[in-house]
Image (cartoon, rainbow, N blue to C red; front, top):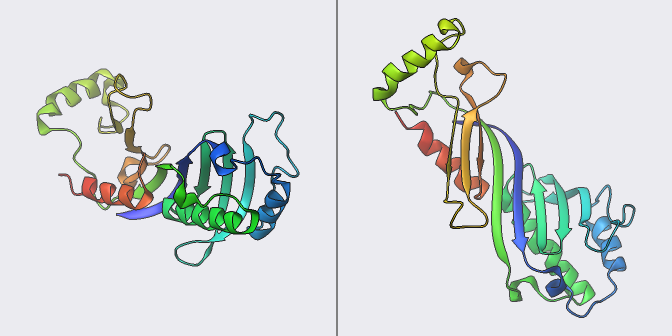
Length: 217
């Protein structure tokens, strides 16, 4: 398997933001310093939110992640948590938040992040290429696929084969169903074996899951 690109890797730390600033400190100096520290191209200083409930957005910043190579970072601060998006990995997002929150705590008197009740969730979108096509369908479905192929344009558009599938937790048991998606890359010949996948897990775990999928068949 070859990783073609990380379309998006999100580290999401859920916590009411008033926990991060429990005494209501004036944080404009902290936001200015945060923009300078990570070289954000834009921040709430230049683009203030329309209302107090709107998210605070820091865009196109730079951070040296796990490999010590600068990666682009976007940060969005919501009322119920912080979202870090990179195109490298969720690990880099976590490292950025640890660095930023530790630095702000030290320099501006806010609580240490490791003393707060933070819940961490993740999401990653990947484009990958397989050496071989995974056998998604049971061979017992072959007659059915042949019938579908004959009915759709009389088979003139080529053989019917796997395009996409998804796995999800029961939406009746959770407000936030967890879904894994795997599908052929759009506008790409099937023979190229290129795929798109989404998973609500860390990037590294997502890649391991896809390696296991490639072994199917």
